[in-house]
Image (tube, rainbow, N blue to C red; front, side, top):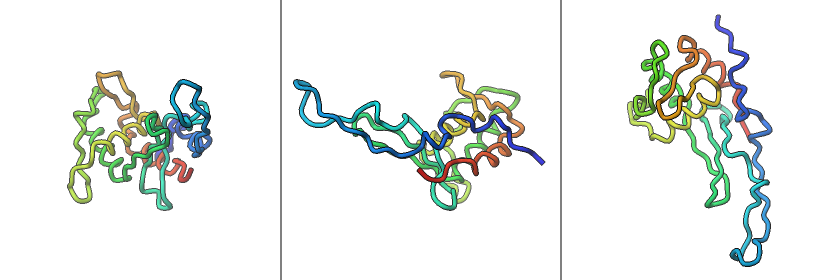
Length: 165
């Protein structure tokens, strides 16, 4: 029986304190710099956080911060998309071979064969990177840290994701 790696999932993106939703504090704009109220940059939430959402934990949610809108936004990907990405990576990562996102996308939904929107694949890829399962090598591409246990490690890490803000 495979045991989950102790190191996997230790990214700051997975710390519960980093995924709490905090409404941004606002401060008046300085004179001469435009009217209105602006968000206090020190009070904004982390740049990105990743969590599982909903009671059944079937959706991965990446929360980011919109500079323009000065509020949080979310990108979501289903567990099926995460699994499809893991399978695509496993097919292309033989012997530590570098692969690119273009090698993986577009993903096919394993349930109905439809094409998965690109942003969902990138949400899943961001989580795999943050979890330490995939390593990015700049623009050259990615490698899998432990190719033989990728799907098992994924199955161990999924339940560890926070399920609520």
